[in-house]
Amino acid sequence: MTARVGVITFPGSLDDVDARRAVRLAGGEPVALWHGSHDLEGVDALILPGGFSYGDYLRAGAIAALAPIMAEVKDAAQGGMPVLGICNGFQMLVEAHLLPGGLIRNAHQQFIRRDQRLRVESTSTAWTADFADGEEIVIPLKNADGGYIADADTLARIEGEGLVAFRYLGVNPNGSLNDIAGLRNERGNVVGLMPHPEHAVEEGFGPDTRLAMRSGVDGRRFFTSAIASLVAAA
Image (cartoon, rainbow, N blue to C red; front, side, top):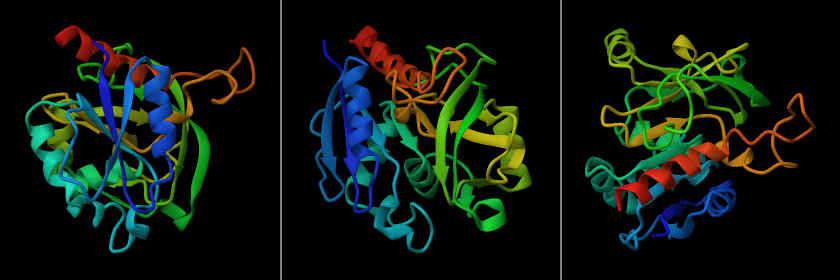
């Protein structure tokens, strides 16, 4: 089978086309979905892309979390469908209570854009199974509201249950508590992170590496991992 991965476009999405391209390069079939629809068109997995949905009014991702299609996203996630939220998509997932905590303005009130080192903290998800526990990867980061927060009890539960998917290495770019760059849910089908794996999927267009400029493709494994898990389960 060919895995069909839906990428939802919201007003203000910036990286939906990039996410669809990443799915295609990973061997899947990207399916463009619209925020105002209630039809997931029979897809096997979902991606909530980066951008500034609805202008990031109220809070980043807050209005998008109430978009018509999000009712179907919640049902699909609770039914076990793989769902990936990237940057603004991560913000939507926490606003929709599919992942715990919240995201606020970056420390120092600055927009951050950099190639970011991460440590993989969990490989027990549909989106991270191609990584190794503790592996260090480099993924582009670009956000203004990426500071992860949670109350003490929630933070203790996240750490105790192993729900941290990625941590920042070298520098914490936005003041996130416990250097949290991404989370997973208990079931492992929902993952959200602030960095952008869809911008590190093809040589010549990714982060610099020791081998060559713009040769980094660490982000590709997010998509190959999910697609492989879907094909294996078919």
